Image (tube, rainbow over all chains, first blue to last red; front, side, top):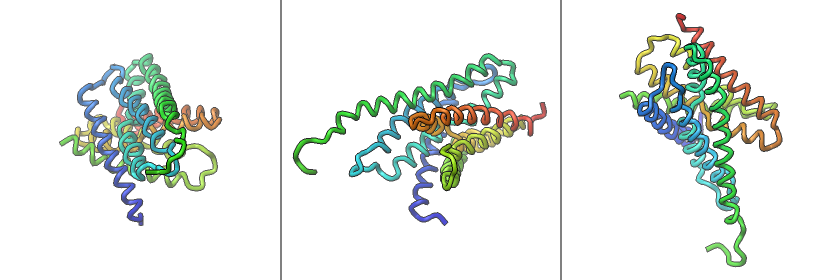
Length: 146
Length: 119
């Protein structure tokens, strides 16, 4: 039996995941790809989701111990919303569809491009946030809290 | 009403991903994100099988495909974990995780199509 606390976390993941999937579904409805098209929509969804994950997880996980993030921030935003927004299954199936449809060059390009751009996005975003935050990590001289 | 089916499928898929990740995190022997790996392979297999049917309804595609499989699997956590492995000087581990996930996921999609596909 999950404790109420883990139930709340699961609820946050479910809600975030549903919202993220709806955003992905909206993108796929607005910019549909199929047949032999290069799956640009899934590519962009995954890359944007990875960049946002780099930002969110640095802001949530790398904090001063006395100022922790809200306990539901990671489950809702990262595990839920961005986890549900990005998708691995569509990526894998689209690679298969391109191969089986005789678009081998597009299949290989898509196969390689997504992980490369995804890693680049998460790394660039995380690094940028860490750099931007560094000056604020310097403690102020004198003066207590408040 | 397609959007509602997407939301319901995702509201099951995303927490299931969280639970699998937690279960496989416990007492693991190697520092490899087995949870994300497992859901990504499983979701790719199910989506491949669903599309292999060829005559799945729009409703089934929204609920099981876009919603459940889409939210069960994740690219963002996969990318973050790969980066984390690379940053703790486990470059080989990061590369192995990356290649195994991509090859395993695409292989699972092919297998799913082969299981249900009529050709």
